[in-house]
Length: 136
Image (cartoon, rainbow, N blue to C red; front, side, top):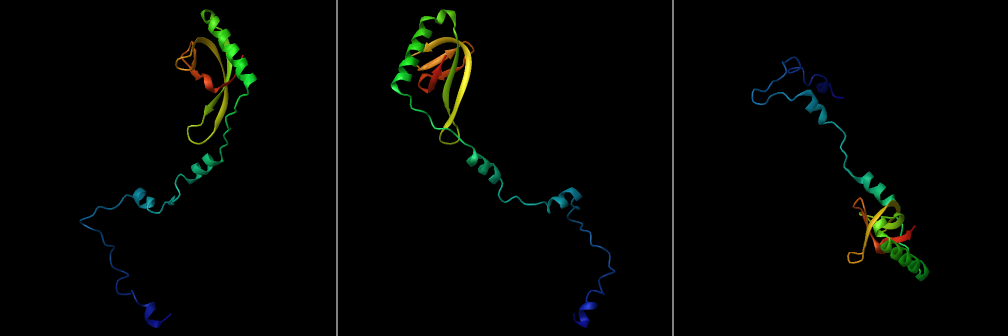
């Protein structure tokens, strides 16, 4: 260190602190926020979790399973006035990526809508007939 460096600010060190007349003082909370950590990769962790989340592929039913499902759907149509209670397992596609999950639900059947291709429950839920893999 040079000799001049030691006494470099001696002429201003005892002067009063400058206070601006134009700009009001920043609140301490806002001043502290300037030094908060910056998250440059906002959403990166969520994207990694989403990528790691597993989905299943839809199973292609064989002819025997399809025939059995058709018989059970036919039985339901014949007994709709009784609102039979069923357990349905079906494939629900994932909204964010390829694949999906198999879901099992219970309910009382209101109708088998062949035109819309849906199984309609008394509570309003609808399941696509093509997604069903098991019906009990």
